[in-house]
Image 1 (tube, rainbow, N blue to C red):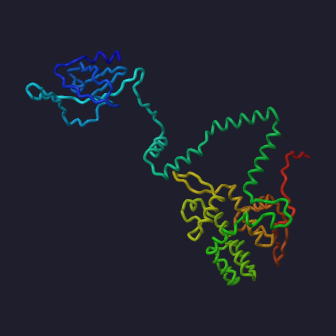
Image 2 (tube, one colour):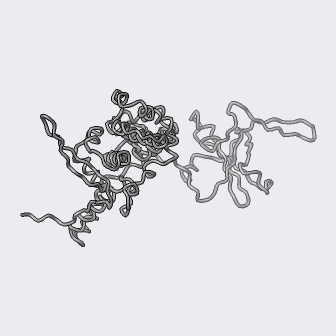
Image 3 (cartoon, rainbow, N blue to C red):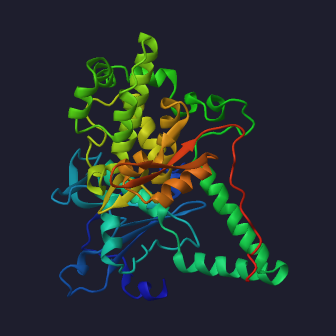
Amino acid sequence: MAASRAMWESGDPGARAALVQFANGEPASAGGIGLSVFTSTEREHPRKKHRAIVVAQAEHLYYVGQNFGVNTSRCNSLCRYYVGVLDKEDGKMRVYNAQHFMMQPNIQGEKEYEPKKKSEGSYRDKVDALIEAFGSHKQKRALSARRMNQVGGESLQKAVSTVAQQIIETRGSEFLTREVQRVEAFEQSTYLPPCNPKATSPDEAYKLNDIITEMELEAAEEASSKYLELMKSGTKSVTQDTTLSALAIGAIRVTPNDASIRKLRAGLVWYLDTLVHLFQLKKKKFSSRDTLGDHMPPLLRTKILECFTTVSFDNGRVQNAMTPALRDKIIAYVLVLALHLNSFSINLSLLQKDFKVSEKKILEVARALGLKIKQTRATSSTTEHKSRIAELAVPLTMPVASHERKRKR
């Protein structure tokens, strides 16, 4: 305040009358308020020479008004204000030029607000700031999802290294190895269908209701009508349809006499074939709205996308994607469905043909499900074919992770 006092002087005979208005209402003791007007000393400056400050001293508080800066009056600057003084003796009114001031309470010790200067960020930070201020709801959701997925790589790696070093120092490297194997086994189990290891029959080990419920089968009745017609038409129509998977073709060839069982089987074959086609989709197809086709029931569309895909942020858009673990999950669910459709025995070469993955991957999923693997040989006139048959038999032979190192011979 010491520096600003030198720029102002009290009183000005040629100044306009001060018309004051209090921002928080008229004070209780309005008659006892003393007003002081301070004008700028820079007479030669074309803009600053008209600046003025009005100070009102109330009983417990000071009020300050000014005709410049952020606290100036919001009145129209193109209008002129006048104050009329009525002389009661001669009945004449004298009009004087006036200037409007909005009086704000001045609290002792309060600092003037200074907006923080934002440091210059990168191009991505500036784009994010624009999206926060003016972006659409979709852009804001995408920005929020991307920020939630961002993890400080260096700090995370440093924390993991510190914890691993502490475990090695206290319990040894073998304990850390066993813990990693245990976590990997748990992550693998989360992508397998619900299992009952103590089941007394194959259909209770992996229940069909855990794969697809009766309500979902009813919702898919219209979508599975094509497969029901193929069961009725015969083998010739099945082989001519090139869109069917090898597993679906093998299941359609078995046609039950009971109409209700045939209808249930058609729904299961449709669901199996849908999962196979979902596995075969390329990355670009996941970004389109018709990922699962136009005739997909909304109930099944929501379930399939939630169970077998994940949400990712790519090229500024939120879209569905499929991780390697989710691809293994599809193989596991299709394998269980195929077992239910084929009396709990399936040729694994059919899965390898549909999914176009290595035999090692198919065997890995089959063993994780607790299936028994048998190798068969089929000899023709010229060649000999080897195939592996997976059977679902109780009790299940679940894999046991070995924590001990193999001894070198």
